[in-house]
Amino acid sequence: MLRAFIASADLQSSQQLRAALEQSGLVSDVVEWKVTAEEFPEPGETAADVVLLDLGRNPDPYFALAKYIRGLQPAVRVIACSTQPEPDPQLLLDAMRSGVQEFLAKPVSPEVLRQTLERFEEESSSPDKHGTDRLVVVMGAKGGVGTTTVAVNLSVQLAHKLKKRTVLIDFGRPLGQTHLMLNLTPRFNVRDAVENLNRLDSHFFTGLLTEHRSGLQLLGGVTQPEEWERIGMASTGRVINVAQSIFDTVVVDYGTQFSAEWGTVLRSARSIVLVAETNVPALWALERQLLALLGMGIEASRLQIVVNRWRRADQEALKTVEKNIKHPIFSVIPNDYKQVSDAINMGTPLMGNHNNPLVSKFAQLAAQLTGTEVASKADKPGGGFNLFLFSSKKGG
Image (tube, rainbow, N blue to C red):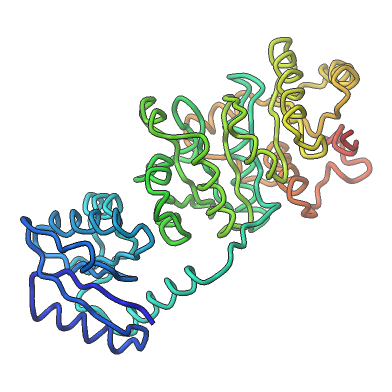
């Protein structure tokens, strides 16, 4: 049974919330507190499993109280009860940053409140079931090789073509750019997730996401370079773990940054996609990055090299690269500068025409990385050049 705390300045409204809590059958004790801007309750008075904020015209004292209580009890669940059926963006942002995890419209329905409390109890009591094979990390050998393009289009195909519940997390530095390629304007980003680790659960995490029309969910990257000063690399692992507890596939755009701090996360990935091009600087960087990842204890079979902007003339060169680095090329993505450039500038990922070689290519790449079967003309005899020319080889 739960202990509840009601923060209100309206006696009648507070009594209605008490009645709804008691009718839920999940609450054993209810404490009411009259909210003022000048005084907070003593720490012992706030001991509760769930806090209901009965928001008034000025929500600031309520959000200040929520932040105060969360500082004392990081595990407490906070529900804001508002006369606004759909809170405006600024109110939602202020609430989130103060510790609010749920918004309920007043008058609060006892049934809706009961369902919310049941979900809280289930999340608190269920064991950690984070997937061990749901994470796909996309990294660039160097800047400018199309890492974000690969991450975005791979993610879209996972969600749209393969119908997998997919989230794309943008850890690109110094600025996240995935939202531009999806023509989205996220209200929250990775900084909001990292700064709220003490209350980051599945419900809170999904509230930070922005949905694309393909079905893909996005946790956008930072929009100001200085935001990275408040993001510790170790904390990114917690964000990824929560994502894995919700989604079938978690794709992370790690950009071109490399750090041993990411070792734990990288070793837990199903696949690490290393994006490169067939030019000397990119292949030189690829070789050294590959060696560094192997040196961190990452299995060679998890490292998948994808060559972007591939041309037929590159075929022999790539065979030489495979021999030199002693690691197979997992896949090649054909060069189509105009189509990709137009898609990026319009914020439209490659997802429409399934006869399009690039669309089919990303769908196949998504299927191979997740072990899903996808039929393709390129796989049939006489169907033309196989865009997965090197993918049948095994890592070693």
